[in-house]
Every structure is written in structure tokens, then in C-alpha cells.
Image (tube, rainbow, N blue to C red; front, side, top):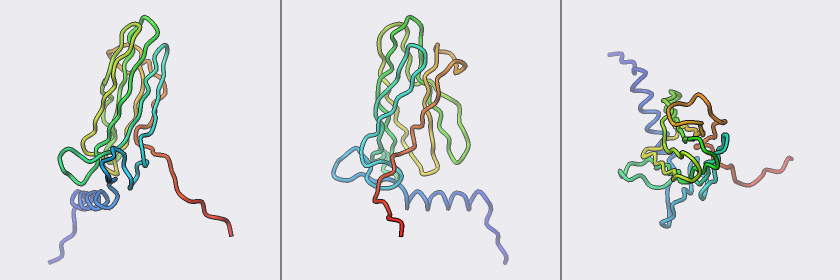
Length: 161
């Protein structure tokens, strides 16, 4: 019997295998990931548009579900110094497929609003970005998106020989 693996099964197997090998882990009770694609500690993020700035930190930690995948945690604040409304929007891309932007926080007028985002299953094939937009209805008037899933590269340098 000649059986050829179907693309979806092969893709699932590859993703599961890659996740088990590359999933960041947490040690010593720290909220920061110590292996895999994430940084060794919290990483700062910030995005601006008009009179609003959103800023905070992001990190990975053990998933609530007990799955072998990490959770991605993004915390911060949206501050507005003007009279208009501004919102924080996030988009996740899973396996190269972009999802829609979803609103995470809004501040109308002067003041601040908390930004608290948790992605329960942060897989090696997941990317995401965040942007600040004028208003609270859509993403038509926004600042530049910032990555939520690119991590600082650390390590030893290799001397040229």
C-alpha cells in the first residue's frame, strides 16, 4: 500500500514538533522565558499616533492550559494628551495567515487606559503587531505597527578567523 501524507497532516506534525522543540520555557518562577525565541526577560514596546502613546512590556510564561506552548503576555498603558479618542489594536498572524485587527483598549480625551493582552498559545509560527489608531471604530488612521513577537538577539559573538 502506497500512502502519501496529506499536506494538512504533515503541516500539523511539523508545527507540533517545532513547538515542542522551540517552545520557550519558564524556570525559577520567573515570568520571563529563558529559552526558545523569546528574550530572557521582559521586553519594552511602544507605539504612537497623534496625541496618544501606548507603551509597556511583554514576555512569555507558562501557558494556563498546561500545554507545551508558552503564553505571550503584553501589559502597558495607553495615554492620551488630547481631546480625541485613540485605541490600541492588535493583529495575530498564525502559520502565515493574518487575522483581523482587534481593539484592545480605548482612551477618549486626556487620561490613560490599561493595556492587558494574553495570547494563551504562543506558537513558534505566531507573529503579531500592535498599533495606535485615532478613534475607536476602525484602523483607517493609525501609527506604524510595532512587532509584539520579535525578540532581542543575545549571545556570544564569533571572532572572524
